[in-house]
Length: 248
Length: 304
Ligand SMILES: Cc1cc2nc3c(=O)[nH]c(=O)nc-3n(C[C@H](O)[C@H](O)[C@H](O)COP(=O)(O)OP(=O)(O)OC[C@H]3O[C@@H](n4cnc5c(N)ncnc54)[C@H](O)[C@@H]3O)c2cc1C
Ligand SMILES: Cc1cc2nc3c(=O)[nH]c(=O)nc-3n(C[C@H](O)[C@H](O)[C@H](O)COP(=O)(O)O)c2cc1C
Ligand code: FES
Image 1 (cartoon, rainbow over the protein chains, first blue to last red):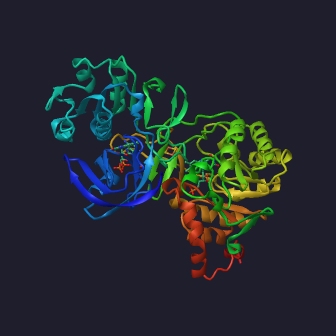
Image 2: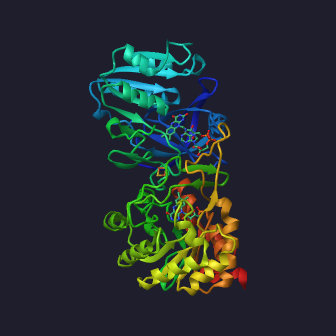
Image 3: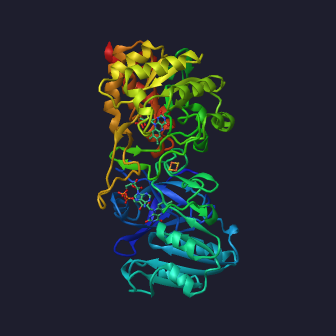
């Protein structure tokens, strides 16, 4: 259920020079699918900030966010014991029942966090999981150990080659012969488009848009798809690859 | 709750709080947060003759104490609104709505208003002659007294329900427009729509909104709205629905003091889905604080 909740900060620590992990105390029984998001209230800022669910336990919710502006900067100053207000249960998330038994999960930059919860879910469902993570550079990489400890095939690439393969996640996908596997991905638009054109398979892609409400009321986040108009905050952020109308 | 009730053209509302058009969809999205029957009424999303997708994204830019939107009147078109959206709303909401209508020609306003007039669920028809997002039509009707009057006359000729004309603040003299629509037969005035605004990305220097400009609203515009409602109340004898920056029960009292009979809450619904509920629940204690017995008694008290 969508509700406005006050949550105690259990942890808020830097993972890189500009990426933070925030763990909130929260009864997470509202989560339907990995890839859903919450809208975080930031005092002094008019609109809430959409952040994906990275991971969760029965009583805690993990968000990973990059400091890019005023709101995320304020988030980064929060201390253990502070209280954050979040609007829960937003977006559709990844419906893994649409995926096949072998999947490739691709994350780029701040698109990586929701892929962690997704990988865990797929493993729980007994799927064969390949993970490919892309970052700009070694200094930007995070959560590699966490992904590796899931015990699945994890590959890393960076644009400058400072860590893992030099190149893009699609290069790794080709190298590893994963172009026929059902894909699920989150990352910058050019990455999503490259996955769509490189792969021979179908998949699920998670998109971003600037939001007003985050729960379907303002039409701020609309996008045209082959099956009609969709709101990124309700019918998305995850879209089926065959449904997407790519703009150039 | 008698002390909160107000009357708009003979229609008694339990309270003056109405979510504003475009910020509340067709209402039912909000019934997941609270019982929307507690609202005075609901102003539904701006409806046009044909289905409209609206503007390209990004359509939203945050501002200090407000936001810019350039949604561009996305809606499924009047026939679908009546056949699909209203039935969905009726499942969870049992009062009448303020049906907001937009158009790009007098014909379009007339056709939409006529269809709305025939619907049981419609209490008031609100004619948006002010949406700043659309490049043709919308803007010019609301900025020229003569054209504003023409739309009003044409719509009044085909309707039986009260017609409220929703004014744009993006004009030099709002009083002349208000007087023109009153003379043309308007039953009331809704004001204000959004102020034209823009924001630019500090890193790229480029506009944040794809459409470059959009409508600015939220608490930051409240003083502009209060000033305009005050001026128009002085000049006309028809009721005013006050809109612009309302976020608290105190804001409601201020807007009604300036001359509004009811109020609408816009951007604040986006920021906080419980905004209208909180305002309604807070009103009695804020009224107590200022020694106000009934809301009816404070309408336009600034002028007395
Ligand atoms: C569904 C969804 C899930 C997301 N998940 C994550 C995540 O897990 N981790 C993460 O680091 N980031 C995520 N983002 C991006 C994140 O919302 C923005 O980085 C954040 O809102 C920036 O806020 P700011 O105040 O720091 O930046 P500012 O630029 O100061 O923000 C100004 C306004 O623009 C909006 N905005 C700016 N950039 C974006 C953007 N990229 N997407 C949407 N709105 C934006 C802000 O919400 C705010 O309203 C997600 C975005 C969406 C839509
Ligand atoms: C996202 C959004 C969409 C809107 N869409 C409409 C619309 O379709 N028709 C209309 O008459 N006004 C529309 N408005 C204007 C509001 O109804 C209201 O007049 C304005 O926002 C001022 O009130 P506020 O300061 O409380 O937001 C919209 C405003 C917002 C923020
Ligand atoms: S952000 Fe308001 S509808 Fe999606």
